[in-house]
Image (cartoon, rainbow, N blue to C red; front, side, top):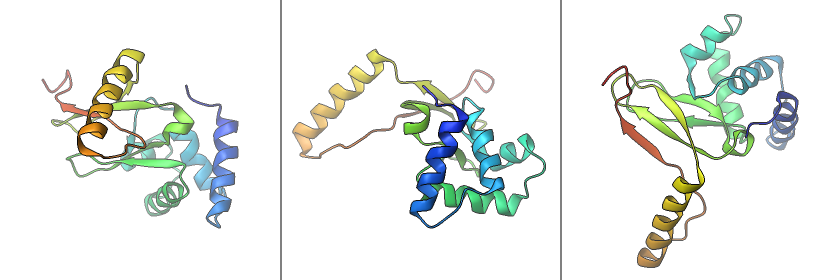
Length: 147
């Protein structure tokens, strides 16, 4: 479940303060764009959503927002990283990653999916002695357009 934009801004301001940064107008604009989408966006898609943003400052601000724990970078096989708000701001979810066009879509973490993942995690922890703190699941394949 995603939070209201005001809540996202308040969290961002707090977290940015923790890394000695401010919530500038450029960062506000980036957060508004990422709050208003249902999937991770590339930098070109972010810039398309707000043509007033300069590419170099948008990229630098995304890096700062990532360092502050407000934005996550989703890396795929193509040349563009994608950006989204952290899961604690949007709700836990996974991704469908198209190996054809590179598009990334959010996949809801339904109760049945999470039961299956948690069962696998428990098995891994038992067999390998590896303590799992969190998980992300990216399903890689071909989207309907590319298939």
